[in-house]
Length: 113
Length: 117
Image (cartoon, rainbow over all chains, first blue to last red; front, side, top):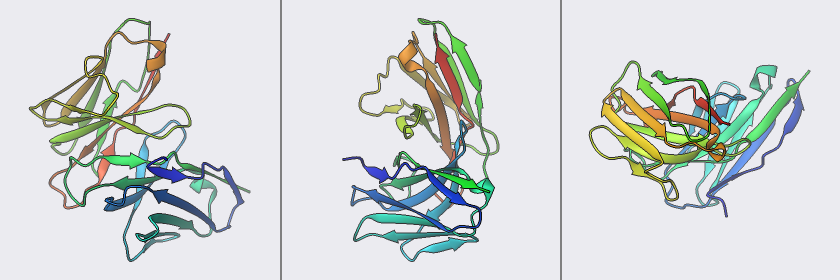
């Protein structure tokens, strides 16, 4: 079983739609959670961290369910520029540079006119 | 946010040659840098953790003698792919953490696309 699992997609949605991505992780010791965005042939860029209480940043909302080891990302009013691959990322420790990031394979989003 | 650069952005080489990739933190000192590899349509896989002034820590299955890592200063880490073969063709990405920040964010370089002929 993969450590971090995501539906690879692609999710093809019209502009303005709401779309949700899910992610599950296998390591119950994971403490930090993130969503990254990766454009084609580019490096990943941090979209947002995910906290137990859930957090929102503009059109983006992230949720964490520790009991189910499940993370979600909701994008409202999607824009053409949201087209990218969204990577679910988990980290074992809360702090410290030595704990590695484990990446999911990503979910591809295509927003269409 | 912090800036990390990589050089070169793209390299094409013949099988059997060695290729050096540089990763620099431009506006902060990074005691720890990370090297990842990403094959097409696959996730980023951590290869090794590079620690300034000490030996790198390699992930299971990554040959330390093939992927030489040097982290001689607080702003520079290098990855050398020795005797490269076509199966080493991949997207190599480094990241660094700014220890002066309270967040644990890793900042990624733009990546190096290696093609071995």
